[in-house]
Image (cartoon, rainbow, N blue to C red; front, side, top):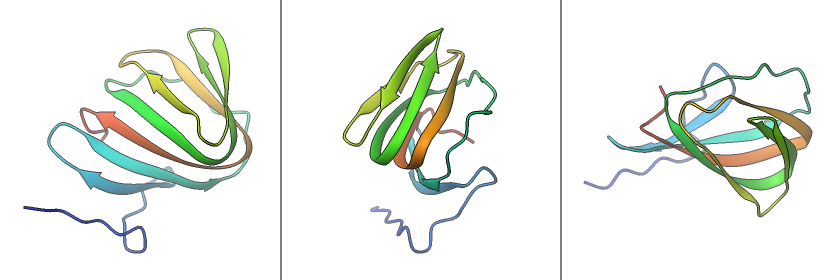
Amino acid sequence: MTIKISTKTAREGADGEVSLAKGEKVAMRMWRHEPPTDDKPSASRPYETVGYVISGRAELVLDGETVTLEPGDSWLVPAGAEHTYKILEELTAIEATAPPAS
């Protein structure tokens, strides 16, 4: 069975993420027009995350290392890794999580 999710009708989550396609082992979401911020607390999640920047710029701080993310860049946050993001310019990005983030 094919599942199609349109960004026009996709559900928006409590943190502003747009829920896209989701299966039993992986889920995709979009962060659309996220405003600049530098006060996001660090977190550790039980799922692996890969992402891709569509527009804007951000910094990913992972295990004490800071990496700048720009359009066309992708990243990986391993499950259980302590990390945070600092959005430098309004950001639109896609993430996939495995297992699916709840």
